[in-house]
Length: 267
Image (tube, rainbow, N blue to C red; front, top):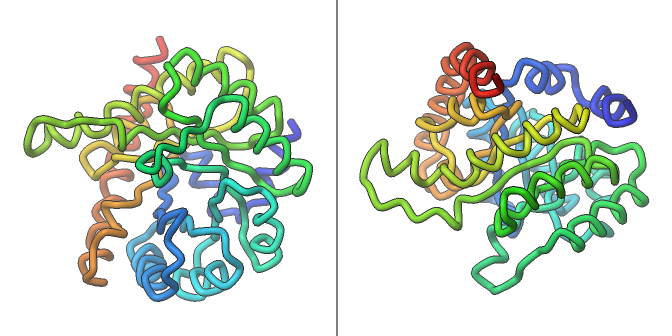
């Protein structure tokens, strides 16, 4: 119930998006400190109907993203000591991960390190909502156990990843589904494990998603989704807004189907 009380501190619209399993988070990038680019992404997120913008952990970026988007801000980092200044600047929540930017460098996060980062963050910020990404490099059974352990250590939200490990070999819609398969599998496995353990922490499905696969994420058990490269790789602001609107529509239109399919999957 401690986690629930922290989630209750989020803006009411954000709470509703989680409760109704339709949260759309636009990710600017954990290593993206380009203020102008973050502002463009944030504007598109706000205009396109997103619920949350996720930016690198920097107080100036928090303020700029908030002004541009008029949305709650989540900051991402893998250094807990960076979080308090960003929260003081107005961030509504903090997130450990995701780790996609580190894998090309050969940097791997194991379960013990992620747990330690979680404990350090919770000690620094006992009342702030904390999302933690489960590394996709772990086997699924270890991802399930880590998710349960993370909630016990103080995580309020669990996020999945997997886009960097996917190797789609098909074009079109089939390729988009292949790209999302690892994070969808993690969302399904982790959401079931949390439910079985009596954990009420919502799951966000992120990394490798598109408008095609957002409804599948909800069907897999996620309460929301995080989308980065589908938006932040674009240079044209109008194209960014159009993509976010498409994501919003896909998530909304897939909600009823997702809930029904989720009940089938869980049965």
